[in-house]
Amino acid sequence: MTVFRALRALAVALLLPTSVTPAHAAGHPGGRSEWPMWQHDVRGSRHNADEVRITRRTAADLAPRWAFVFPDSDGMQSSQPAVVDGGVYVGGHNGVLYALDARTGATRWSFDTHAVTGPAPNPLRDGPTVAGGTVYFGDSKGGVYALDQATGRLRWRTAADTHPAAIITGSPLLWRDVLIVGVSSKEYLFAADDDYPCCTFRGSTVALDARTGALRWRDHTTPPPVRTGETSTGVPVFAPSGAAVWSSPAIDPRTGTVFVGTGNNYSGTGGDSDSVIALDAETGRRRWTQQATHPDTWTLQCFKGVNERCPVPGPNHDFGASPNVFRVGDRTVVGVGQKSGVYHLFDAATGAVLWRTALSSGQAAGIQWGTSYDGRRIYAATYHAHPGALHAIAPATGAVLWRAELPADACTTGGAATVPDACDLAHGTAVSSVPGVVFEGSEDGRIRAYAAEDGRVLWQYDTVREFTGVNGLTGRGGSISSAGGAVVAGGMLFVNSGYVFGTGIRGGVLIAFGLPRGR
Image 1 (cartoon, rainbow, N blue to C red):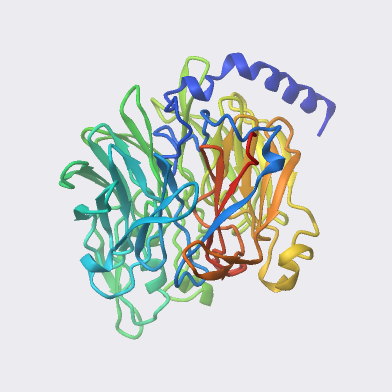
Image 2 (cartoon, rainbow, N blue to C red):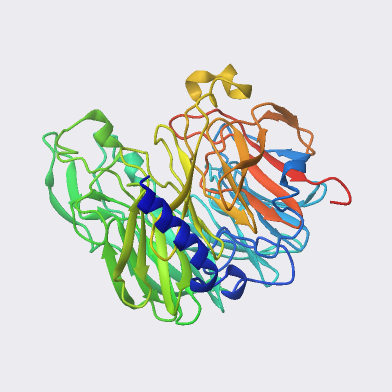
């Protein structure tokens, strides 16, 4: 970094407290340290401003308190827990939603979705949202549920989409009496089959009545697909398709504007793929759309190389990360990370680009899931960026204030050293923060706490080891690489360990960390 750039970054950092609205003044819940939804709050901050026990001074004293071993996770456990009213609510790869005691890990109740959907596998990938005495979550059949928070009794289930490939991966956003959910899809997997008629899924954002599950509105990301021909073997071809909504939405509560990110096309190039879309929360009407990458047509068929099912492979630069909504000066802005490695900042009212900062480049090297904003800095982590790194970004300018790379020996020391071929120096999970501390996990199986002001590692814990769960099962921790990140609430830290997508160390354990008594 040149002297000029260093001085500019320092000046920006010194100005931030007066030029950027602090997180606790930006509509965050107050009074209790809880984490009620994937985004933590409706603005998508992933920052718990109410946490007072886990701080920069106490983080180094964190130690495991209990572990819950998920049955049949097989390295695919990805549901981020919600922590409300002393309970932990989390979905399992086995299709069961669990309510656990936050202090002890004891099971309060469980709800098996197969009682509603039938015996076919139904893994729960999204993190639940808990509000108003209700637990909301989605499943891998395109369904959205509302359960009684105290008993686990089913209140309603609604099919957000009836396409056979539809799944819910992003957590619902509760805004007043409306539940807003993105709909994604497994069709990019189906397309790897040469006999599959690719593709017909259309990504969408839906709004449901939170009390009844009735559909309020739907916004599709692509036009209806039409048959465009057939392959040389006679398999029908359809386009356009895709542009799934993988992530959790965020909202500007002042204007009732919902922001969602979309994925790439599966076929064709039409629609709003790789875009950020602003919608009216009451009606679903479009306010603006910003497309970041075009064209970008990609499915697993592209792993076979260029062929008639993948003639021009796109870079696969989804917006898989959830947006952050905050204020810089007197302007409301929306920021979001992309798998291209770029963090984008837009004017929330108009969609005008304010700045773009590239943190990495290359296939699978970008910002995979989510970022955090604490009122002073944006925190973003990069995936297979050789190595992955955690970054702090100045909200006003996009300047990188600090960068903390994963250690070069992370895959050759600790538990990862026992499975070196499964490890990579990559951050595949969302970033979380509390005042003064940023939490991020990595594929080496370690969860780390970083100092918010300079990126120093304050504490780390290696989860690649055997755990005996409070539920009587034994299992291993592994890579911390799922869509959900660390959750900090009530003086405790909750981390899912063992998710694998492509590379990674298999496991399936939820670990709860706490502080010594009196801290």
